[in-house]
Image 1 (cartoon, helix red, strand yellow):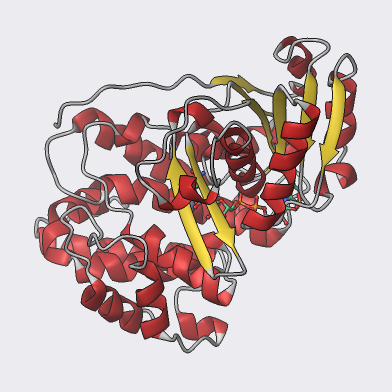
Image 2 (cartoon, rainbow, N blue to C red; image 1 turned 60 degrees about the horizontal axis):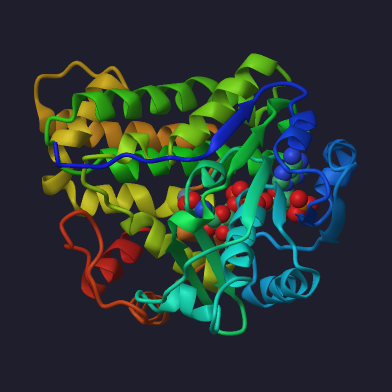
Length: 384
Ligand code: NZQ
Ligand code: ZN
C-alpha cells in the first residue's frame, strides 16, 4: 500500500425528508445563490422543499445550468455572486449542477480569468464561497468530493479541476428525490459509479485489502440493484443503497493508497465534448477496451475482480480476468446500455479526439502512464 493522508470534510445528511435540514446548515440571513438545471426539481417537488428550508435567507435563483455544465453559463453566475455578495451557494441537482457550482464558488473569489482554474496547474486560489448541495441523481460522487468537470462548447473543451476549497460543506442525500429520474439517467447512475470504482480498483495489485474489499462491495451492490434501478423501482431501500454506493465510489475512501487509472474518463470526456454522448455512455464504451489494452498490467486485479465480484472459480487467472471483462459487458447490456460507438452510429474522428485530449497536457494516461496518443488511437479503434 502506498503512503497516504486521508481527508474529507463533507457533512452528509442522508435519508427521507432531510431537505428540511438545510435551514440548520446555512445561517439565517445569508445571501444564497440557489442554482439548478432545466426544471426537474420543480416537477418533482424538491424545489418547493428547498425554498421552504431557505425561508430565512435572501435567495437569488440561477437556473438553466446544462448537463455537462457550460463555462459561459457559469461565468454569468460568477458575476451575480460578485455583484450580490453571495455568501452561500446551494446546488440542487445532479453532478452537472454541483460541478458547475464548484467553479462558480471558486471563480467568484478568484483574482484573474476563471478559465485558468481549468487550464493552468499553478493557478493560485485562496478562498471560495461556501457550497451546499442537494443531490437528485446518484452518479458522479461530486456531492462528496472536490472535483469538477466543466465543458466549454465554444472551444470543444471538457476539462476537470480538483481543489480542496470546493468540497461541499454539506450534502443532502434524500433517496426519494431520485424517484422521478428517467431511464437514461438511471442507467447513467449505475455505470458512472461502477467505472469510478474500476478506475481505482482495476490497477496494480499492491495488497490493499481494505480498499479492495470496499471497492468490491460497492461493485457488488451496484450489480445487485442495477436491474431494479434501471426498471424504475420505487423501493426505498434499493434507492438508498444505490445512492450511498454511488457516493462511496468517488469520495476518496476506496482511492487512498492505491494506483489510479482514469484513462477511460479522460477519453470519455473527449467523446462527450465531440459527440454529446452522456458521460456514463462514454465510459461503458471505453472501459472494457482500456482493460483489454492494458490486460497484462491489470491481469492480477482483473482476476481478483472476477473471483470476488463475479464469483468465478477457475484457478487460471488469465481465464478469470478475460471472463470478468465479458461478464461486465453483459451486465451493461442487461441494463440496455450500449458498449460500442457504432451502437450510437458514431464513426469517430480519432485524430481530432486525440489531439484535443493531449492539448492541455502531454502526460500519458493510466496508472502506468502507458496510454499515450497511439494507445488512445488503438483503444478508440477497439471501441468502434
Ligand atoms: O437539468 P434538470 O432539469 O435538473 O435535469 C437533469 C439533467 O437533464 C436530470 N435530472 C437530475 N436529477 C433528476 C433529473 N431528472 C428527473 N429527476 C431527477 N431527480 O438529469 C439530467 C442529467 O443531469 P447531470 O447532472 O448532467 O447528470 P450527472 O449527475 O450524470 O452529471 C454528469 C456530469 O458530471 C461530470 C460529468 O463529466 C458530467 O459533466 N462528472 C463529475 C465528476 C465529479 N465531480 O467528481 C466525476 C464524474 O466522473 C463525471 O466526470
Ligand atoms: Zn465518471
